[in-house]
Image (tube, rainbow, N blue to C red; front, side):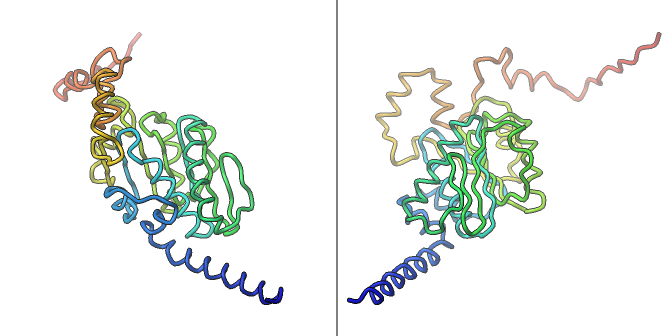
Length: 268
């Protein structure tokens, strides 16, 4: 076979591969399978959803970060010019989730080349960007027109950060996704879960419902840690934290509308 004919055959194969990727890209479940993930039932529901606000309350190791990484990469590949932000309380956590994104990107054979590739972000030739940021209010200001905003370990993110990032979605009409295990009865993640039922699409996945976590492992973990911690880490329960002087229920029970606030106006 002549060199020119061989080159044409290679180009034809590459075009077929690109067309095949483009065909499955619109189907998020098929896309997840393409990167090597067979989604659980709750993950398939999430992949098929276009809800603008999503809460994911999951036990440890149930696949919340993995499916968030799938959605982040899918959004960047399928929508030219998309901006995907990944926020986490610390750089290490943001880096871990972004590492899942890049692993999936490599497994696809870099279907859209990257113009820039960093340890916490990349920009693709289609104009899309994925940026992973440690969660402080100062680091996130300046971003706008966000298409997908993923807040990892959201129960541990400071409320000031949450309030700072919400306006980023105002013009773009972008999607907000908060995923976490619980961390006490406090913070915006807890408030959204308890009081924001109508505003959020919610997913709760206990470790006992994950097919990759055995009953024997959970029984061992339950014996190895305080019951309160086990229920928080594996059963999605918002338990009291160690640093609380008064319980959340005790404080809420002490509040009443029957007592008018004092009018502290001093006259001299």
